[in-house]
Image 1 (cartoon, rainbow, N blue to C red):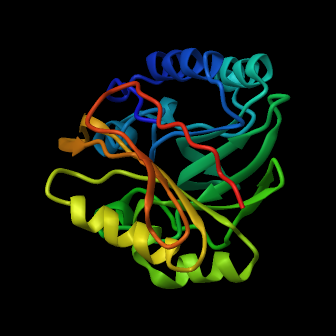
Image 2 (image 1 turned 180 degrees about the vertical axis):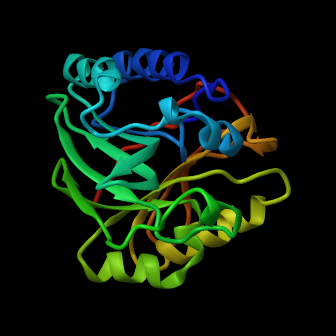
Length: 229
């Protein structure tokens, strides 16, 4: 999914995520890294109201949308968990329940100033598939996808931001995980976030690395695919 993200506007982005989830015709919807705010680090540093816990009432519309569509959602958010601030993923289930949270393990230098790295891998089951969660730079660390494959994941789910000029980097990172025999689902941005211009290209890749489906640079577009044996 390549949603339209309003910089640091939590209410607007929750409303857009809700809209997209309510029209989803899928078992699983994956959004990019920090999709509820964009990668707006200065705003996050200045405004504690942009941060979320899993029980934040502002997430209610997303839970309701998952119930309405019977869909799982992988949502990117600035996550406060046990008093620690993370670049986080929240997985909601088709009853609107919290299935899992994941905190990005591999941080850029600039991210170290605002966020703390996560310390655990996360695998969740959706429709009989085991999904290993990753956020952006995680996929650049070959040990990350190796550990998830060894833990039994058969789908590598990446929420990311790749800026213009990083097209080959995106494909290289997809190729590492796909080379381990996993499907790869990658959601990233189109347009600008955090002062960086992204090029789109979200998609789904088969084990081995062949693209099943890819988007261009469209905003608020879906890449649909059926993951088979």
